[in-house]
Length: 220
View 1: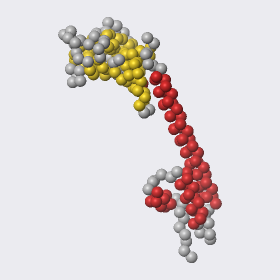
View 2 (view 1 turned 120 degrees about the horizontal axis):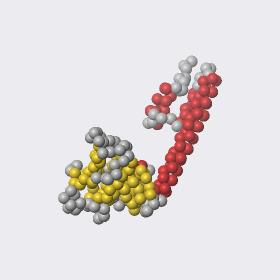
View 3 (view 1 turned 120 degrees about the vertical axis):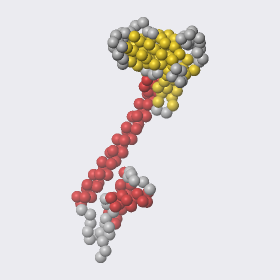
């Protein structure tokens, strides 16, 4: 008598993949293979009960993992929705973002830096899209922490620069002319929120920024 091939293991997975066009098995696919194995086993040489029990345990574990994965997806979706609703409450508030890019409009912009240590010389360089320095701002307070200055939109010669996109570069040196770790900061007022996908983007008077870039929030 010819022996009917066992469809368990890697061979069955390969057969199923060829039919379904997928290399991954869901819990329903696993159950179909298990039933097919029972239907096609050799009556004179049935499957080992121990192996069958192990396969049932695998199915149970797979079903639990699928349920956990679904619950995690729901939690992520809920968290994203809550983050978006929280972002809406920021409209009208003042925010500080750690970012080097900003937009110049019809009014002054507030630029600054975060110093990790006491500095002897600090310069905030406003640059155009080509990296050319247009204006140099010098904060009077150079202690460790956050410091800001207002830029009126004029270059080093006192001439107004056109509205548009600019960037901020920070030069911070100690008394030995050694560099000090620093980060550029932009301060603006939130005028709106874009809820695109999973990210919330704050629209301010000096540009649009991801909520993850926000360092501080203040009421006006």
